[in-house]
Amino acid sequence: MGSTQKWPRNRKSETGQKVQLYSSAYKLAWKQISSAERREQPDIPLRIHASIRRQFKAGETDAHTIAFEALKEALIPETHS
Figure 1 (cartoon, rainbow, N blue to C red):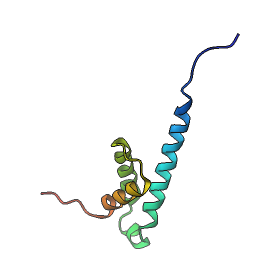
Figure 2: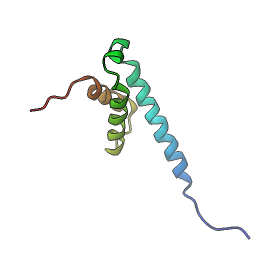
Figure 3: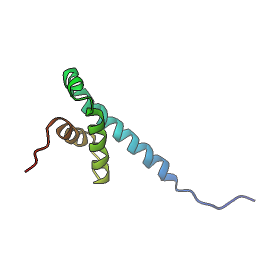
Figure 4: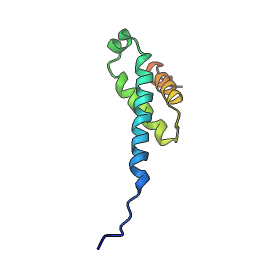
């Protein structure tokens, strides 16, 4: 009578964990940016987002480490040699 199709149960919780990690890292980084910096560099939210995504792809799982790296990437201008 019933279907024996199996759905990956942990996929939903894994997605939820990633969303929670992203949110935590983003909030931690955002709180450290002053209003003046936000006005001077209106693309900061995009830079933070891009950095967090890169770090996710690299396998980073600590919100504080992700936030710190995102801040470095968003606020410190890149130096090209």
